[in-house]
Figure 1 (cartoon, rainbow, N blue to C red):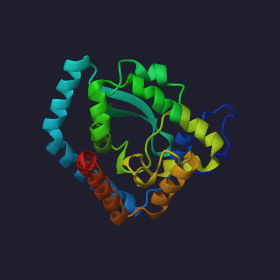
Figure 2: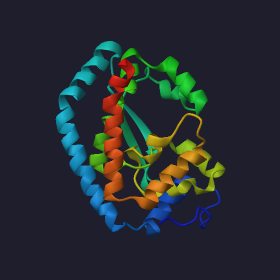
Figure 3: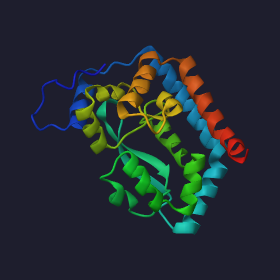
Length: 228
């Protein structure tokens, strides 16, 4: 486990830097983490192989409709505070993150709508925009299941407001998670954190597979629910 955020360090040391330091000093893997990493590799490799034609089709659609780049690359806080580059299919107009950077929560959701491209709306609705994160899973910066990754600036802000928020860093961030299956728009960040910490405390092969299957069922069943 990580140490308390009150552990000694330079007075102006950013929280993300502090957690990276603490990780080098004492994060311990549990046996289950090794098993879950093996599942990550198997699922990500198989999914990329199966989805390769779809990935090519989406890339062409983005290039034809709005030009490059095909992928969005964003800095996120990973396990033990390490910063990594997260990949998604680009769904917003070029340089949108520069304009949206200062916002969070409902205000960000509202402003994002005006920046979303036509292809991007479909990618977001189907959640296909998340597929490139399988590359992050293969590289080890993400897991298939875990707390959703968050931008460094927002992470530091939330850590100041919610002292326990740093505990999300015990495991790699995930493509899906307990919180994503349970949250509603009305939930606070503290309530979302509760679900993330529940997964971290109880993580197991059974719970991991349960979340993967529930996510797949929700995504695959969405077109039928929409048309009914």
